[in-house]
Image (cartoon, rainbow, N blue to C red; front, side, top):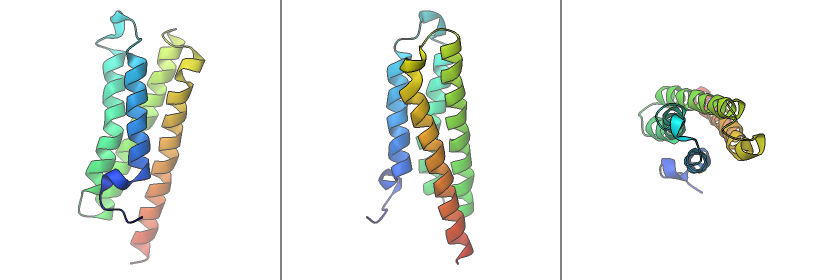
Length: 124
């Protein structure tokens, strides 16, 4: 399949699944977290597909890679926030498993995409 825009990227689609999972989880956070951890988690989650899309829409591979690194950082940040929420007793390990796995899978996919872009740069 030919990639026409960022929405065709598997890594973008996976990161969108992650956003949906995080919003689902956040619904069950206690009210005390309405303006703290939950907001951080939303921002980090939304940052991932947003940065993939923005980077893909830029003019150079160098800029794309820069935005992919930002997306990867947001995925690691989000994974950490899920683990914090578990340690605070807001979620069980089982409740966050899907979210953590999506974070890890997304980070791996971003790494692979970065390598692919860098390899295409060196072949020019």
